[in-house]
Amino acid sequence: MMPLRWRKPPPRIVTQWRGPSAASVQAQSVLRETPLAAIIGPPGQAGPAPLTGQITLILPSGIGSLHAEQSFPAPGVKPAMRAFAALEMMTDDDENCPEFLCVAAIAARAEADSITVSLSLTEAASGHVSLIWSAF
Image (cartoon, rainbow, N blue to C red; front, top):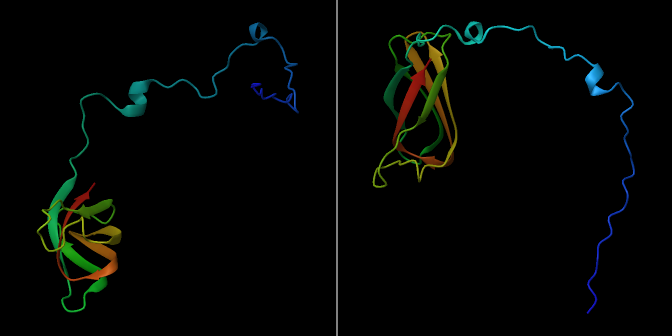
């Protein structure tokens, strides 16, 4: 048996450096040098802790719903903050556990002392959905 050898074709484009040699060129910084402490701030000063909480979104009973939006009180939240919501970890025997709930999107919007959570599903569901939120 004769072994087959794959012959690699020569490259179609051959590049050749025609600039000055690396020894004759001085390296120049693109950005002016800024001390690292000025970029990240002084050490030991932590930012404010995010506001967090737990909420229960109630989906209408009956045939269920594909979309729900509800506002919840959240003292200290300001409209300029970023809000985040996620499904809370639950056990499998709960009504709407994250494993069986078909979530398409969860969105949270910070408002004055409240958070509005929007939940979109791919399959209709009803009952209570436990969520956690954070605003910073």
